[in-house]
Length: 423
Image 1 (cartoon, rainbow, N blue to C red):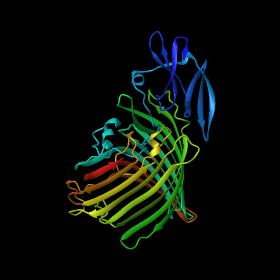
Image 2 (tube, rainbow, N blue to C red):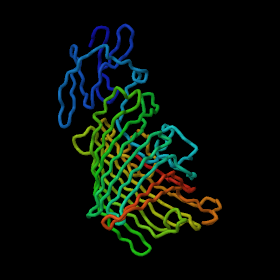
Image 3 (cartoon, rainbow, N blue to C red):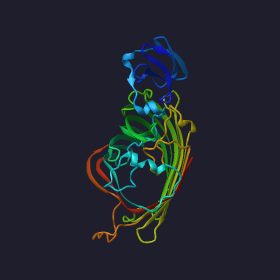
Image 4 (spheres, rainbow, N blue to C red):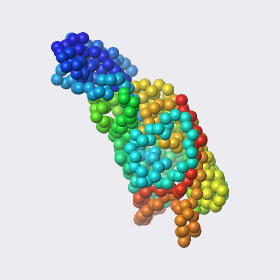
């Protein structure tokens, strides 16, 4: 349609309809109008644009005025090729997805994209330290009916932080837990020039959890089985990227629900062992976004880790298997990809996979450093400074506080990922 010195037409640079304008005299292209989450089937009608605006459970016809003064110039990336953006993909949270690289190597998130770029075999490699810093405060009573924790984490590679507070009450059965978190998440999307661009956003969450723990421990063997259900409300805002400023990703509010079953069993170990000599850990769970929200997602996961003795004293061997399945509809707009539970570097990765299968092997051993008190060859898993404060007697319950300053440090270990299959 012609309007003054412009030609108006439809385009889909964000995966939903938008109106572009071309100046007849200069040939310059502009973004004339784009709408919210449900901006579909845009049609120019005189001085207005007619669109179908999607709200929960229905479409509504809306009229938008056109104003040449509000046109925004398009850069070369938008002009040459249309592209699509999935609003939220594999959020990193405060979890450290860079633990497989040296502490002296701070790399941009884009450098990790290749880790899931196809089926590949991984060779042995040393794993030293991670790049996360954190502080945690914990308090509970002697009977452990009440507990409270607060934590702050900072990821050096992602250059973002995250905080979380959690309160638990186990005076009744099952156990109730309430947690709240806030911080910046980070990700990457692939643009029309087939290169990666970094962006971040702020995410606030409030979650309630009910769990049924069952203690099956006998003698030197510790065993714990737990069934739990969780409801979480998430609110996202402040997307930070110059190319995403004009795009509306909805109000950013959605709710999730999930159930899980976990088991941990192992034989008591020496203080100098990195992992138990014999044991197993597995978790299986299902999560999905609930109705009436801007985003939709679904995740089923199963993670298993075994513990076996190594070839020498205080050596540990950990075989592992993991499987994840995401809803195939997630590759379209309005999707939310859950972070997953697989022990594999998945952050900052915009390709969607319906299934992921992983087999892994992890061998940990002491680094050869003389330690007079514990013997040659001992290096503790992490260094941790703690401060305890005990006070008062209140209704036969004793309370104390624990303040921990954490700097994650890992033993030298060899990690083998035989293969990762995805499709």
